[in-house]
Length: 77
Image 1 (cartoon, rainbow, N blue to C red):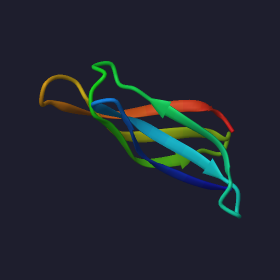
Image 2: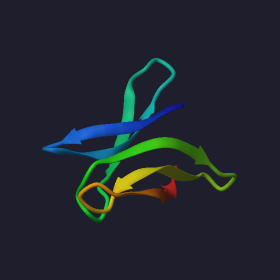
Image 3: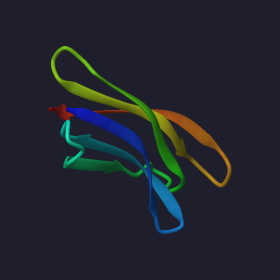
């Protein structure tokens, strides 16, 4: 399996995005994460631990021009 993370446009903002793809490039599933401020959010990296949990990390907008680093733990794959 192949995983791709980044951001997807959501109206005037963006959300964190994670795709799971087959070796042939077909999408298996995707998931988005919208930060608390409903602002500009983008994933920059991800890791899968030994138990199969996915950790997605990046930045989320927490106000008009302020950003936080954010890590989200997803369900097991």
